[in-house]
Length: 174
Image (cartoon, rainbow, N blue to C red; front, side, top):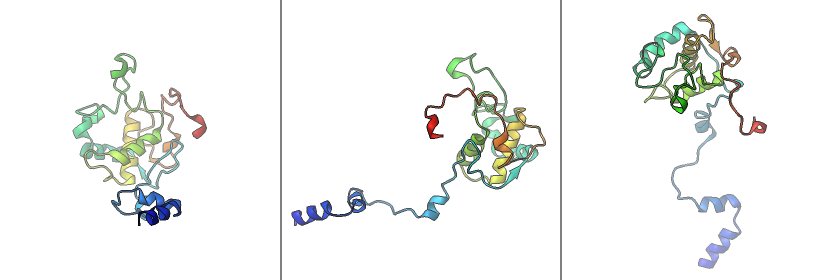
């Protein structure tokens, strides 16, 4: 009996052998299940969804959903300040890294807000809400005009002040 099981394992397809080594927990994920979590936005804007938002819309959303942690006007609270451009060298590694002084890509802002905010209930914001919050934060940091809407076309075009100060470890993978 042991020999038969061993022979079946050795001569079975690789997928079957791999399945035999799992604890048998959970269920296989379907493509439709995976699609809900496939929300990555790349630096060039690939993956940005349809939608749009303005700084004025974002200001109201920020007051309702974000100010509790990030403070009024995004100037800092129990979580980091998001608007402002403090020195990155004055306090060494402990320097406050903000959107204006540290972030290299504007699309990272969209990706992060959509994926992780508001804490502790991430992924409750609509895509329009996320674009509006991006517009509010970028305008507050004087990186875009107050009246410029953010969407899949305009957001990747925002040039971040720190965009050229990162060392790409694997440039051939980009």
